[in-house]
Each structure stands twice: as C-alpha cells, then as structure tokens.
Length: 353
Image (cartoon, rainbow, N blue to C red):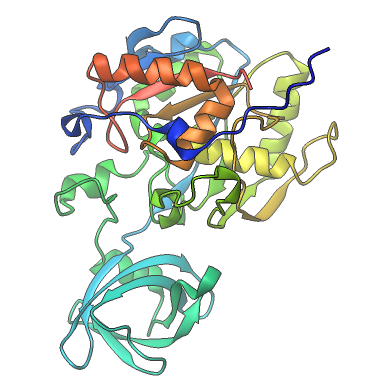
C-alpha cells in the first residue's frame, strides 16, 4: 500500500528561464494568426490558432469570460502639484471606487486629487484587503470618466504606453460587462471567423463574468505556496451557463474553459455546492487558489496563454495538466520561440489533475 503523502511544492518548482525577447510587446497582426501549442497529448504539436475549432467536437461547450476591460489608469496631481497615478481596481455604487494610488506621499482622507486636468476625486480613506487600496469618490459615473480620460491598463511587462491599437486589441471581440483591469487574454485570439467556424462545427458557447483585478500580476512572496493568499475578484455564473454545462455533461460533451479566469469562475461556483451536487447559479467573490492536488469538478479542457514564472497561474495550469507535463510544454515553447504573456500565443490543455 502506498502511504506516501502528496508532494509539497515551493515557488521554485514553478520557475523557468524566459528570454526577455519572447515577452510579446504587441499583438499578432491578426487575432487568429497567433500560434497555438496543442498540449493535449504526451508530445506537443505546433499549430496556428485558426486551427482551434477543428480540435473540438460537436457538442463541446466553450465557456468565455465576457468581462470588459475598463481604461482604469488615470494620471493626475495633488493640490501640492505632486504627481499621482491611479489604477482603479473596482467600481462601487454611488460614484465610488477602490484604487491603487502611486504618489511620493499618500494623499490624506478628505483631500482631493485632480485627474487628467479635468475632474477632482475625493480621497475617503483606505480600503480593501490589508488596506492596500484607496477608497475614492468620483464626481460622476466612474465608468464614463474612465472611458473619456483613462488609459488602457497594460500589464507591467508591456513597456510602451497605451495606443489606439491597445484600446482595440487588449479587449475581446465579445467583451460585454465593464469591470476588468486586465484582459482575459486567452480570449484575445478569437475573431469573427473563428467564432463562425466554431458555430459551423456545432460547438456551443456560454459565458461567465469574472472582473480580473490587478492582483493577477501580484507575485508570490512566500516560499511555501500554501501560505500565499489570493486577491479577491467578483464573478458570476448565470443560469443559462449552468443549464448549458449540465446539458453538455449529460450528452458526453466536454466543457472547455477559455482562459484561467473562466476556469476560476466555474470551479469557484462548483465549490459552493456539495461534492457531487449539480452546479447552480452563483455570483459573489472568489479568492480561489488552485495548486497541484486541486480536484477539478467542471472543466475538461483549458485554453490559455503562457504565464509568468513563479506565478499563481503557473501553479493553476500545473494543477490542471500535471506539473511535469507543463514544464515540458514550457520548455518546448521557449525552444520554439513562442510569444509569451498577454499579447502572446496560446496553448490547449487536457485535464490530468
């Protein structure tokens, strides 16, 4: 009888060497012209993303995250003239938001910050987990003001300022519900031609919403990954999607998550019902942290981009497809010069965890 305990992982187990030139700074010329690493089998297969519909079967269900990236970065100054940069993390009722603020000296509660040389925002105090965010009150609808005066919140590893191209390409073609400060990047590869090919093949589609927060780029600062605490994000899995998943599973089809955010939403919803019980609609907060040993209940396949070394998303894909398998796939991707991170290429994985 095997009495060995499950392996304990440290952050170093999810590290790899990535040449800086493989970090994509711009999207591919066409969304579906990105490369696709087919990692379902033991050996990787190099493909182009427009091949993706042919890898699914009629009756499979493709689940997207329909969140919409807001222009969450604002540049401004304090009454003293000191520069302030804000990254809106969450829009609240009553013209209020939670935001990260970067300034030489943090503004005090009750003070005003002028953004875009156009409007004043009141600092109400600190907020969020560990008081890491600032609670602000806008003079009008924050979404309207951000769209008019904000900047696309490009990830920290993209070194150029946002452009008109980014406003289009750092957004999925089916984005519908504003609230994300980072894109669900695996879905950036889909264009109307790929969606039409999926429909023609008999692949069904459904949506969840998870408003991706800036914490998605937060590094793991502890060696023992069990000690890491995830940021919280709002998500919703609606009744139509629950019905579509149940019908797919009953008919023997596969549930394919487009991106780690979709997977996190689905598996978070599943954890709100007893094991073995049917999925039910759910909306609320999730801080789910998926590491090797996690028991997946919903997702059979995962389409995802290539993630940062030592990140929580490297841990997630390792949990899904197997740690050794992911290391081999990433080694192939580096050797084959795949493009990494948000504007990079994609990979298709089969559940092994």
